[in-house]
Length: 292
Image (cartoon, rainbow, N blue to C red; front, side):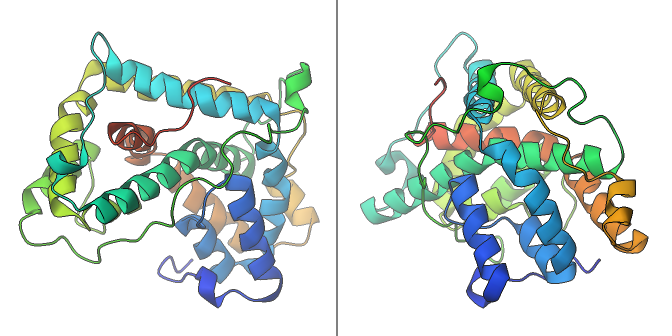
């Protein structure tokens, strides 16, 4: 799979545009994530099939409960015995308009964090033939609708720096070292923050030490446990095992490429990147609810 290919939202037409509309509405966010844009560009029919099979996972009250528990697990672990540090506009060296944009973009990342965690875990497990929905929940929340009052369309569409700006090399190096990134492009959250180098430095100064704590490691572990538990308690079988996709007419080479992509995204640095998203939002007062 050519992971440099993406179908951007402005270029999507027909059913692809409709799929993107559905992703934004389901994820309660104003953008479509990189992995979905890449799938639609490379394997459009398979991407449509996969989205149709995973979408119901996000539409229940059980998912709403998971999302707030995910956020609370991370933030609670980071707080420990003292409140999570927050930064005001003046401390971050940005204008009022820039601060509003920063808060809006971080709110969008906060909204998608638990959703991407489930997407990666569900697709990784299902496409690999590992246990999914093998211990389905029986409570009403498992199939009750997602609360209409929760989340809405949160935040603003993220924009990103193309390169590390002058003066931000130290922050970028610290981020790479902590998360274990190589020399490739930084994840979206950091390219977003680096649009405002002083703010990126200030937020890393506020959170970096907490990220390196045992508390954050425990929070990441707990978030992973919650995600795996939710996927295994789905009330339906998504039908994305290799044999299911073969019966649906998809070529083995295509399904293996997609499986490998989700396995890559569900392991490695992403295990600390996704849990960090609520922390950045909380640091500017833009995090979502921590309880229903």
